[in-house]
Image (cartoon, rainbow, N blue to C red; front, side, top):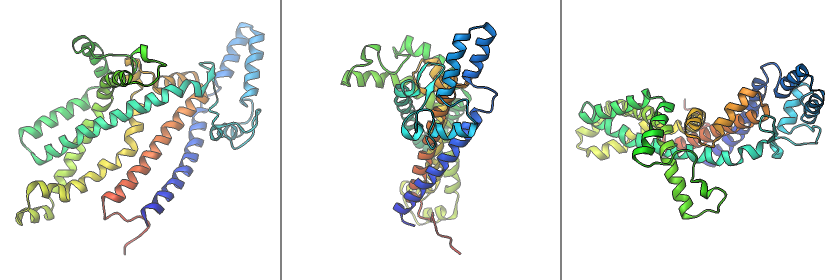
Length: 342
């Protein structure tokens, strides 16, 4: 199967998978009894606020929350007309946040690009740290270099992200002058892009990038080291050594490419895992990402806001998986999609 045909096939399967995931997300969010408005109506009736109850019941009808669950799903996605016609996710209407009393699009608008920016920076940090340290630890196995890299890796895995965030929150600002809270200086908010604004964003990215990416880099470094050591012990490597191949060329010719497969396959899970794992970090560091909004939406059963954010994370997962599959096809010539050798 050609690369173009495979990419088209993966794209179609991604759309089908996203549709299945949307069903699961919607019905799991609605598993707890009631919703934001029904809970609010119960509280208002208990306090005797009849006018407020009428307004809440109007909102239930306006957003089709008084209809059967399967109809609510089709209206939410946009496959079925609701009180306002076809107005769902596929039409670009993300719904209304009852917790924040504004459209979901207005809440997540700025938070989305901040989330993507922070986590892309963390992914780049993971690869820039894990790749050289993992290769160096495997090439210098059972030396002080290997032991030092292992110590750094275990330290990164053992330190909780929120604890590391608290440490850098205090000491990074006090002794290094690193800014904390937000992703830019308040004076640049709402201002057009400029070099000073870019520098402010890059400076504010240092702490969250390090905090969010540390554990991922440590885990990936250990995995790459183990995979590379396994490849270096295989007969074809011993044959290459016996023939006098230069160590650096021998390392990069085949063993590193073969050990790199799981490294590339991790792309599909790395970005969404960081998005979900950075919720507490975002709260501690005061980052305006979608993490705190998701936490508030799940606590208050704000289904439209929670549903959109979870769909966004699912979309990141599927896009990352598709990219990693295409890269694996290019990286490893042994992989053949759509063909079974007998």
